[in-house]
Length: 243
Image (tube, rainbow, N blue to C red; front, side):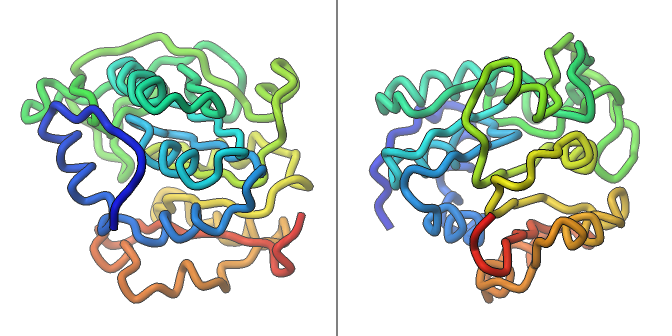
């Protein structure tokens, strides 16, 4: 498949992300393709912006807010956004969490990624030096970073309410969901779910009238078949497709 957006890929991890874009998370692509042009999309943990760029390429009237707290990833995401001239994409240098506050971002010392600071790297954690499975990691750097509760972000900046939310933050997905109350606007949510660290996620979303019974979670080539045990992308939708 040919994609009509540009990505400036220099590092090995960036090149890997581009080379595996179609195969790595097919459910994410199908989900983004299903958006109605003109909806609002919040991409939380956007990395270098691949999924936000894909959304903009398909839906030119959709407003995208792409949140990324790691400075090297954020800088590259802005570069990619500008290269594609996507004025409907807003790059937000911030994390999302339970509270609006100044938080600490712990960046793991991954020697194969030049100490975890290479554009395209992932695995940084908010307020703790533990990976998404709860294991401590050696620290390459600690950055002070603005963190927003999503309700506060919408209220402070008077932004559009999201119809679709992607949360892939390698650990604090549950806190982001707990810190959000404006669900009446939301049609669908993709969460990278770690069943060990966030066992109640399914109950939380079902209580909000979302379901996992949709075509995206049933794809034969879903990334859950290649993920470590207990970790998978789960897409929650409204049964009637509407807020």
